[in-house]
Image (cartoon, rainbow, N blue to C red; front, side, top):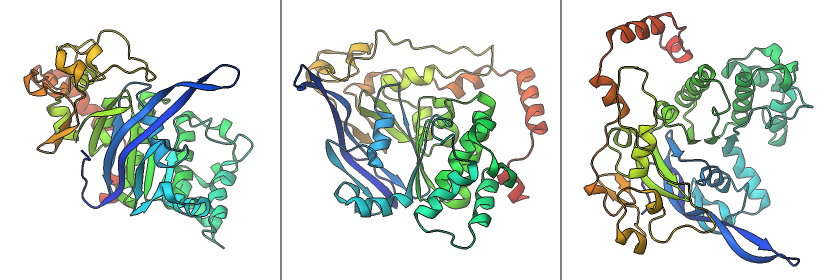
Length: 365
């Protein structure tokens, strides 16, 4: 089952990546790590699809496979109608102008020997863009991400983590892409800086019509930027839905457990925390049948014998045999509304009133 998006820009079908495990003097293959095992989805123009899950579930590998930074074991990826896995080196290089990536670590992704200006001008030279006006284009890129033109002469170590990530975003925007893979772009940043970067990404999407594949493990962050959400567990998508449907009515027990871990900004709010027992199984030896069954409180004999397919019901897809029998979880927003705290609401209102206007607010004004 492939979730469908209107006006699809990206279509991924049965994407598989198995990393061989080799042992012995001659490197004989003795097994494989099933990092990505049959992932399918579509991403529409101007949409944000969030891939979420625990560390090691295959999110980042999926993003790198889509860009062909690593080669797949099998499956297909179509971008704007072109099969990326059949392109030769020259055609792939040309296509990559439309597909860029923002890495998780903003410092490791920047060359410490290059100034910001050199890093941003390099992709322009690579694709012969902005000939005769590259200085103006450099200033435009810095302005887009909230930096000043004088920052172009500085080196990465002279910036804070949030500023470095803004530079990484500017570098991704330099070649005017249509799709950006955001590989946990805020997980290494402070909470206050996370909000600034998320607001920046959302503002750029509205202004430039970008599509995002947003990889994250923090559902609280995803809730603010995603259009649709795909939950991954051990190399597979276990639930896929519109953001409102998934946060309001999660169906898979794994999704319910993830949502129950989102903090509620109210000391008086009480919510049932779902604690998953045991560790995530090894991707080199996944459980038979349903891969989540070893940690699932609702597992039955059928779960061990039969692998549940990802089946859509009313636009909400879930890979669980018994999701209809599972009691619905109370969302974080419902838990917060159930115990209103007038004092907290007053403080939040004062904070919002004192906050400086965003770029989008300034444009509307």
